[in-house]
Image (cartoon, rainbow, N blue to C red):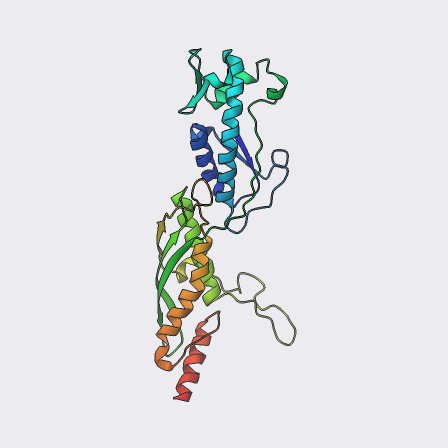
Length: 290
């Protein structure tokens, strides 16, 4: 069984296969997801804004209904009965007028050797489009703890916890991975990442990853992440976006923790990225005002 879809975020293929297998009543290992092949799917808008799983799952659900209806027509030809006499239960097509039954793969194979009417000669294939006009609202909470050396401005992120509502979680392992990556991206922007140019020459001073400040395993704690499933009413599976929920709050919660740690100095705001040098200068200037 081949499912064609437009380009998706990395790792979504496994989740797409799970959804398709459940819809079609097939073992997941029999489903092959083809990504970005314009011979299969000629039009698509790409993968962005948390749309991959909720968009693909919706179009799969809509296509499944048409695929079952078409399967019943093909099975009716093979079983010599009316389409209304064909049922689809537990992943199999059957009729009380015959002892033969088919799953989707068996029906497709049988159809390829059968004399089908013109409207069914393309076989067990359907094409479905879907447009999303209703937004979904993932949400969550992030908490972090920082430690600051008041003499040097050195900053350490010591604890970080996040809870994200992603609607129905199709593949928890992938969602947790997206959450962890999102947190790292947000923390990186909050603490280290900056495109700095020499003011006289315009030469980039962070022209490679050797110079550019990035989050690394040694600079981040082990995250505590939990998934909450409050189903969305805007799609058949109740799916919401995942991954971006890790990034968005990280900037605010990290800077808020830093400002809270520096409240005794009267510091109420500090611009990102909050490097140790910025913290040291903020403390030094605050002490000069005291």
